[in-house]
Length: 491
Image 1 (cartoon, rainbow, N blue to C red):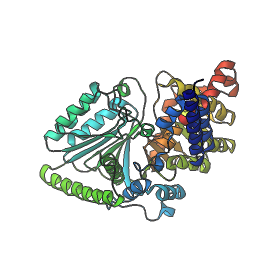
Image 2: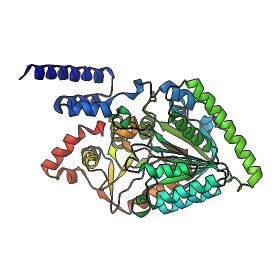
Image 3: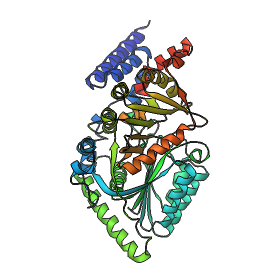
Image 4: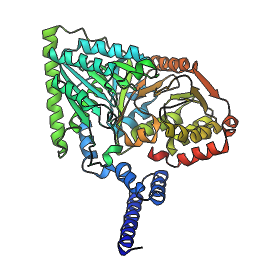
């Protein structure tokens, strides 16, 4: 070797060693730390590149300040009534308090919900709400395609702008990488305020590529909101099965706060102080409430839907939060369940805590059922998840494979008393890397409707009878699945 080659290898060795030390000092979950160390050891050069893009701890970067986001999300959006005496309101008092402590998520009384299990029904309902808007529309989506549905939604939003409605849209930059910039530029030219969430541009790629806004929500006039798993793309109408909610009532204020926090977080001027964001948020909320009142007087809005009776709580998670809020919530639901826990997820790459909670619940006699699609839209994730499926089957969890189409639904229901739906998958990425949002309901009637959705989906499923069915798979298949499992914390 030449002298320069030795220098190169020495510098590279120092770089890899220092990166490994950084991984260790981050005090990550052991499985995730080991996965990154293996990548750095056995994938020369590529391993370093992957770590730069996907492995850095964003909690320590000034770009995302946990203190900033935390202080902003603590600011109350409105004076809508919350629950004062949880001991008398819900058997899930401890879970509600846990979310409130970790996420500043207040529980709200007086809510109603409509469940959509068909993309056509959901988008028709959302377009109707957009058509009735008189003051503002706030929309977050991971993906909005430049296809017939995306253009229809864009036209509907532009029509709202033409009649004086303020329209804001946040899309995820990585989720929309394949969408031409001209699509968003046309919306801007028509008066829609459009922002990309944490844009990633060549050549200045950074680790922000790994931390994405996966939320899907829409707030219309601060009175009705949509939240769930559906992005804005034709596949949700034509072929994919998913679940989305239309929510009205006091909890809509929490969805409004979630949007406004993301809106100011996505501003170009990243160098900002928490108190400045809180002040902006306070001014913004006052402006929206004042403007909405004026619009009601001027346009005689359709009367606000009558308040329902459901107790609801919007819970968000992000890579900047001190705790993996949604993961810990799922763990508590599994461990405190008495009779059953039914779950649907398109991707199953559970953390060790979720895996342990599922096994404990099943082995203690709780009817734990998990529904996943037989085939996913991601080959690597599909294969990596199979070893996890085998493990939970051995523990007594019942696995159902959804047939015929890709089931992108993300829901959970337990004990006829609690249910949730939102953007969160049961995988490392949703629990640790993405900005997610789920709506939780503590209501027997709503839970029974979620339960019926699960049973309706069972009609399209085949059941994995026992672990022998999975053990009979070819040896090379099982070996490949186990190898991919090593990298599941990175997927």
